[in-house]
Length: 96
Image 1 (cartoon, one colour):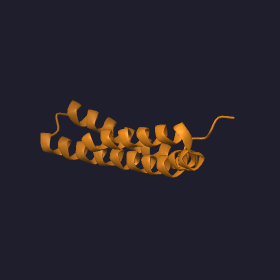
Image 2 (tube, helix red, strand yellow):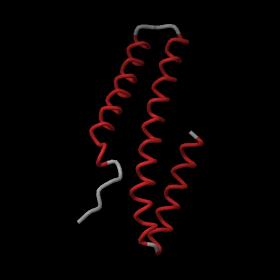
Image 3 (tube, helix red, strand yellow):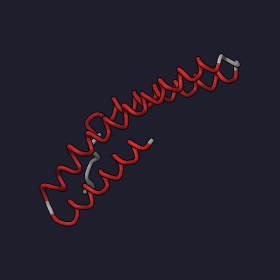
Image 4 (tube, one colour):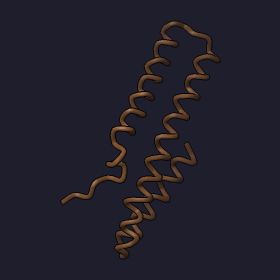
């Protein structure tokens, strides 16, 4: 049996958040098509970026609490792999 992802319990909430981000991006497209003022577009880019970052942090938190914690409890090579994956994901988020 395949292990459920850490976000499985909150999947519907995550999908709702992603749909909201998608709506923000579509709004950005409309703003550009309508030749809206640059600063107004940039303000909306910032809002969409924050929403996506918030989603990423929630997903990361669930991954650490579920997938990484389970692997650490089991120990061994899988534990090391999950910790390294999480560290790399955190580094990517910090750099973005």
